[in-house]
Image (cartoon, rainbow, N blue to C red; front, top):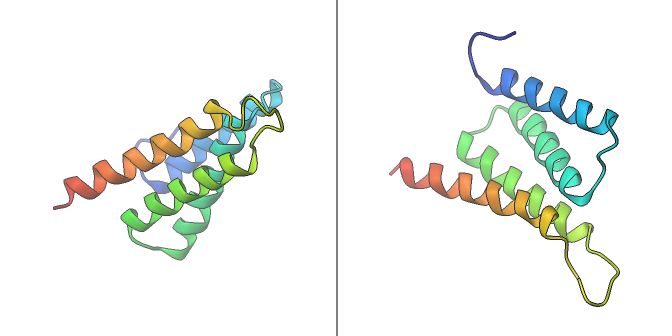
Length: 101
């Protein structure tokens, strides 16, 4: 019930959403990417670093989570759902970086 959106309120809402999704049984590779983003944001905010660094670390974490969740199927080496989180996080980072010029 926050009235101001800041790092803490965003992480709180995001975390609550992931808890709800996990409670409902969602555990696919995309979920792992979202959890990686959440953990990265939490760690970065505790270090009180620049927002641009927070965003790039979150993108890196999501991309690494997608790589760790590759499928063993010979025909499908990666899961698109897992990678969309990293792609989106990277796009947010790039957009923010461009807007700061």
